[in-house]
Length: 310
Image (cartoon, rainbow, N blue to C red; front, side, top):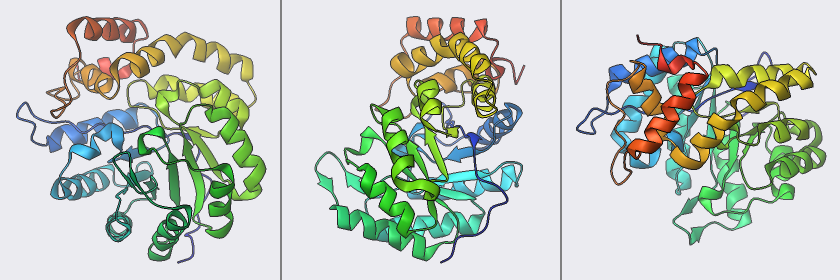
């Protein structure tokens, strides 16, 4: 299908929405709505749902369906929604993408097909995978280039995807040396590269912006403090961007290296956004000392998640 025209390129801060659970690990759908409202109040440019930081790999298909509808109905167009639809099966990925578009998603995000460390597609298989997705939907497709998949996506392959498939103009690059890969991708793909984003909780954001990134997809821990960095940089206020980033980098680093996806849940529970910070087993809660250090650093920055529900 041909790509639906967008009023302007997606850029800015598109954090990952966590999936809140009750103490028995069942879905907390009311808590999910509060998460989304908090994120909108964090002044985000958009929200990504059902991603790895949403614990998507711990959800049943039925739960994914409920969350997709709940999130899109509750946000109701207040900000764009990117829905992650990754699956090893091309057929199932296409079904998920069609479902997301029908529910009102503005974009889908896809990792290349993989299962474990050994089951991967060939490069031609990956090309066909993304082509079939594009044939089935009309909304943009963001390709997630992350170490979690274990799939190496070369710059030349990514640039070829963008040239061959107009719906693919957005890339979330969160591999080691992300800045170099973003720079090379822009050089290789030219105008086909509409939105190079970074990830990894924005831990390499300044280098990635210098390389040409126009957006970032961090967690929902402190997006209201990350967004001014991106916007100042895009407005060429680079010194202000660097100063702001240096101020918040210790918390970003602590989240990335010590906490992972649990950090946002801990902060949102303390801040009254959600009732429980449970992560689904086999994931485990933060060590009490790690939790204490996280909250101490977050409080020093007065992040919104710590006070939104109080």
